[in-house]
Image (tube, rainbow, N blue to C red):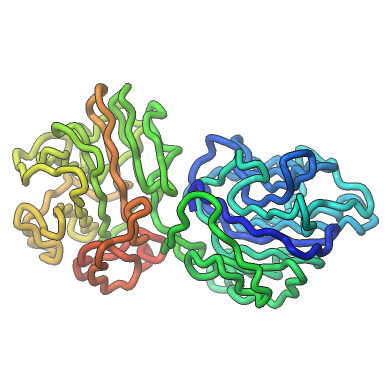
Length: 438
């Protein structure tokens, strides 16, 4: 829901002293302050939960100010954030409690707590009655990232255990998909399964899309999908959009960036739609090191493979001499990485190139082979090798979208993980946390 704002107008005032907000979020960028919840008008009557550009979480309504010491800026992770407010509590620090991934945050940079029985604008109606998700009250802090399982409770201050629990098998914090809570008059539960803004609490407190485009994603706290990594951005040269699935390179320097998840020893399938190409100067493929390495050109990197938009394929830092035909705007490149047999395959618009057969196993029919995959960290990479032009690509790591455009007709996928434009080769899966564990 990058740069998307959801809104709702409160028609009947609720409890303005006691409430709870709970949501799972995945950041897309940390370059600016971003709101995840807000209510109020454009004067001083407002309440906001913000993710600051330095990675801190800040609660900044009129009357008090809470700011974390810890930084939450991992763009590859889902965070569970719970804020419980109860200004009727005698002890000041009990009036505002923040939880991240099941643990109460007690290390705070700012601790200006509300006064006893302080009245907030939350749950108010009238001129301050607009609720914002994915923004702050005045539209100046749009959230860049994903949200899931968003709850709001009117009249009760719950702790994080009402909405999440520790997985007994993994020890990780996970979602309670159907928590036992009392929502109150203005309570709601949205984005439970996909991109529905219909309230699942039973209150019919539905939201509308106030700005941007709300798209469904397979990426969720139970199965985290790869995106491109804005923190691995050599020369800070690229722009990342649509939840870090689209990369736009700079015109000022050769550069490349990599995916948030590295590939294991399994078999993985990825798609990318070139939406800005030119002259063999943009490339996509499998790279074995981050872009912070000394050499920042993908085509010169050892133990990997790159296909450039002219159709020329590189492997192990030099040209293979094989040209499989150029790519044009809106062509889809297919990439299959076989970490079992040390092989990389490329396809175009549903057809495997170089007579490739990703299911051929040890025979590696039509594959391009890195020198070694043993002990190496392989990522998806996208690079620009021309300082005079910018290029762009939209990745589908299994979310079923290229930017905001859904796949035309989903192909078959035996693993059941992810949605792709074309058939996923048998034995391959999406680059996601569940895919890594197959």
